Length: 143
Image 1: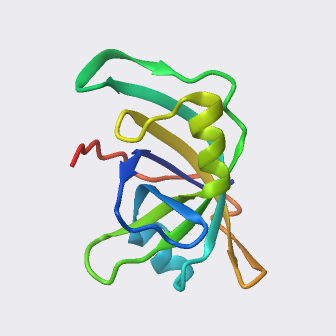
Image 2: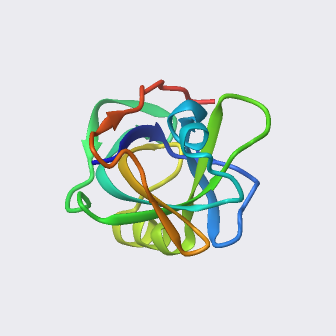
């Protein structure tokens, strides 16, 4: 069980320690607010699906599903901006190397669907929605 999030891979100039400047967003009311997450915790999840929706600047009529990636573990560093409604989940360096080199994932061209299962803060684990899968609303935005 966990929080299911689907979002476009985005690029940022902000690069948290141990992560890369590539992230997905989640509404604060689904993650940092109910779990009181601050101070850049590590978020652990499982990849459910990766879809290519753009090729360069051309929108694909049918998304291309990346094969053999379902079930892989992925880790993020959570940042909680003081303004706005979204948390940012920055992909860890270790997870990004696999996505980039083994699967050819390109930010802003792929949509990532993950199930977030736990947060790690100073070696303490907090399970995320351990009794029921919660689906985060998907809001396609290419900003």
